[in-house]
Length: 366
Image (tube, rainbow, N blue to C red):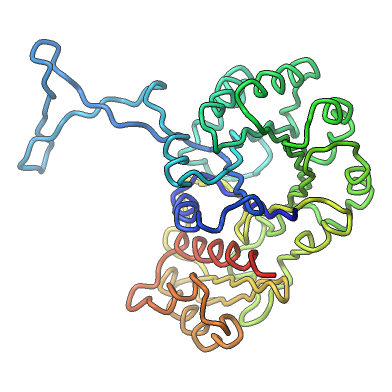
């Protein structure tokens, strides 16, 4: 069965897409969620004697409010909330770790303290083992630069996960496949998944690795992962009113040439991490509308960086002029939302949401 795996981080807009698009998820489309931050159950201070909530009057307020406690490990509800959003649909769960130079950001990252904690293998193992409490979630063991696992620990982790999970997945970058090939062939079953991640490298440069992957002797489903949208391009670098050449989506078609079971990507989004400073409200407004027939993204850009998010009025208007090209059946969820924009045209997150929503819906097309 051919599969598509949309890769998303558990940020606000991507979580919205997961919840809104869950009806599209099935055995042929299972999202892979990279956990970069935790969600917590809010706890409030209680008086030791009266056992009542303790209130405080904050400056500028007329009404007292309950005092919130600092979140603790026991308050984590990350997987519970993901399960609720999915409404019993399946998802791969990858507790996301990254090395110091992997993203080369000149700015400080924001709100991803969990990913830093996950660099410690014991804590990573502790969190991934908890996935077994959720019947619709599939744990992903991720192996890449700076996060290799010893053969002993890797084998033991597979064994430990097997106790509580009917399926497991291994996500491994192409340069480490040979190192773990024997273990993967021996321990993965037809219920499992092996995901070869070529990151942002072009698929044509990986034909030797893909042939090796094709020849791998395993009953597990073989999935090819790619990140075709470069983090180096800014919005203003994209072409206006044409299919962009800056996102080569070739993986979406070539995976079948190697007799693989499916592919996965970031659905037109960058594989990036949130930073603290942001763009201070300036920057080119970019809309990316994927068309499966062309296997390409139609790009609409307002190059006036001083307009910032106000530039999305132009993007929206140009899309509406091309509905016969972009939505000839009138059934696109994302374009319906764009049509209904009146006066408020969204921000960067809104248009990331729209790009991903469109991409997911397009992938179910035959």
